[in-house]
Amino acid sequence: MQIKELTNYLEHIAPLSFQESYDNSGLLLGEKSDEINQALISLDITEEVLDEAIASKCDIIIAHHPFIFKGVKKIGNSHWIDRCIRKAIKHNIAIYAIHTNLDNVHTGVNKKIADKIGLINTKILAPKKEMLSKLTVFVPNEHSDKVLKEMYNAGAGDIGNYDHCSFQVEGTGTFRGNEESNPAIGKPGQEEHVAETRCEVLVANHKIHSVLLAMTHAHPYEEVAHYITPLSNINQEVGSGMIGDLPKPVESRVFLNDLKDKMNLNVIRHTKITSDKITKVAVCGGSGSFLLNASIAKGADIYITADFKYHDFFEANDQIIIADIGHYESEVFTKELLLDTLTKNFTKFAFRLSQVDTNPIKYL
Ligand SMILES: [Zn+2]
Image (tube, rainbow, N blue to C red):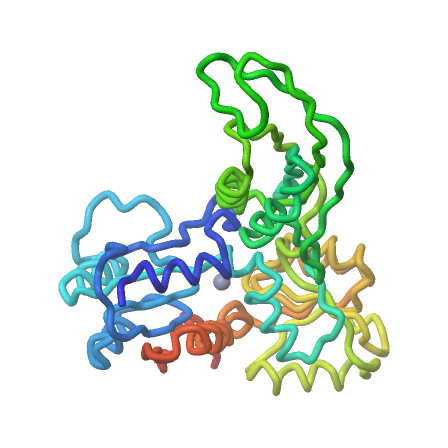
C-alpha cells in the first residue's frame, strides 16, 4: 500500500495537532505516495534497528521517538543520526514517528501502562484546554436532522462516552438575496422568514475542517449561517499522563514488587513509602516530572514515571511515592500497543515488532 494509507490511520488515532510544540512527530523520511510492503515497529531509531529493517525487508519503520528532533545542518558520518539518515535513504526505508501525539490520547502510551498495571476508571491526568469549539448552525427545520447527521459522521457532537450530542432550539431566520443570489427558499430581492433550528454541537478543533465541509454539503442554503466559538473547556480525551484505581488496595511493597514483574523492570528508584496501601495510581510514560503536582492534587498514592532528577525526588514531600521505572521500560510496551491496533486495522499488511533492545542505559 502507499505510506499515506498507514499514516492517515495513525493520524486518525493520534492526530499530529496533539503533539507538543517541541516535538517532531510525523513522516520524517519518505513520501506519502511511496509504496510500502512491510513495517517494523520500534521504540527508537538506531543503526541496529535499521539493520533489522533491512534484514527483514521492511520498508518503513514506525517509531515512538523521532530520531530527527533538532535541526540537521549537515549529514556526515560521524554522528549516529547522520548514519541512520544515510542508511535509511540508501535502503529506501521510510521513517514515521508517533511521539507526544500518542502520549496525549486517552488510548495511547499511558493507557497501555495503565492496562499493564491493571488500573480501572482511567482518566487523563492533565487534560488539555482550548482544543474544542462550539459550532452553531441555523438550518430550516425539516433539514436539521439530515445536516446534524452528516456533521456527526464527520466527528461533531462527541462528548466522552456519548455521541450525537447537540442542543437545538427553533426560531425564525430571515434573509434577502441580491440579484446574484439563488436562494433555496424564496426569490432574490424578497425578504424571507423561515422556521429554522439553531443547532449547537461540540467539535474537536482538529475535526473542524471536515465538519464544516459536511455541514455545507448537507445544508440546503447557498450561504450557510453558522459561527465557530473557541472554548476554554478541557478536552477529557487529550492530555498528558493518566490516573486510575486498582480494583482493590494493595500493600505498597507488594505493589512495587508486582510492578517490577508487570513492567519487566531491573530496578525502581522510588521515594519513601508514605502510604501502607496503594489505591490510586498516576502514570506517565517517559519524562514525567512535570506531572508530579497534578498527581498529588488528584490524590494519587504513587506516581509511576521516569527521568526524575535528584532534587525533584524531594518534591514528593511525603505526599506521594515517586517511582522512577526508567524511560525505556515505561514506554517499551508502546510497540505492542501499535502492533495491536495496526494489525486489527490492516489485516492484509505485515507488521513486525523490533527485537532490538534500544535502551541506551545499561545496568550493572
Ligand atoms: Zn519517551
